[in-house]
Image (cartoon, rainbow over all chains, first blue to last red; front, side, top):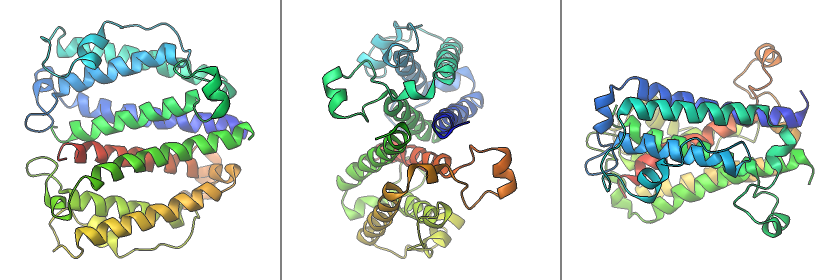
Length: 159
Length: 159
């Protein structure tokens, strides 16, 4: 592997480590445990799993990895806060969608040529990217990796 | 910048974004607020700030960035859980050490040649690194970036 490929592989490894961490937390929970709040009056685990699934699903078009799998998640888990809408999915269904979306993102990112990770992502204009080449796909991907850990730290409190 | 330099700069940016996020949370708190628990019966913010400071201080020798600044933090904030030992520092002192350590790590990592980030870190043997070149400094650095977000997510619940 050349250095660029090692850079890319190390970043994908960090994503996989974050996913493994949260999946380990979730695997210790029964579906009904998803109703627990991470702290009194705060988000339920149910909401955070759906939120992460929706955010990761949005990575697919944003990083040019493919079509979205579950755009219907946005309304409940991004546009609205927890408990604003009635629960539409079982814990098992959320787990399944989360796993499916993560597998799609991971597979696509692992096969992307390392140089392509430094290309412009779909939420930045060509003009802005010209001014700041760090507004690349890699930056978004690392931000989403940190986002997993942010919510994993919260879920950890309720496990 | 060549691609390797963009990879390095993007990763350092992710670290800085994580630090900015947690410092924003902490700056909204008074020193006495550090006594708050992130959830009932869980770690205090006080402990998490000291814990992050100690873990980041350990990055200095681990990534060959320099000598440690505050090795005395380990006993309280790594070897022992919260409240096992009496509080030795004020909130203001913890903030100061955390800022000082983060500045040292950031400055050193920003001036490290991009290829050096892919070298072996000090906690892996040459033999193991030979087998797995992803056990590099970059991997540890990304792991510590995720670690900031993990605890930031918890502190967020108490802010």
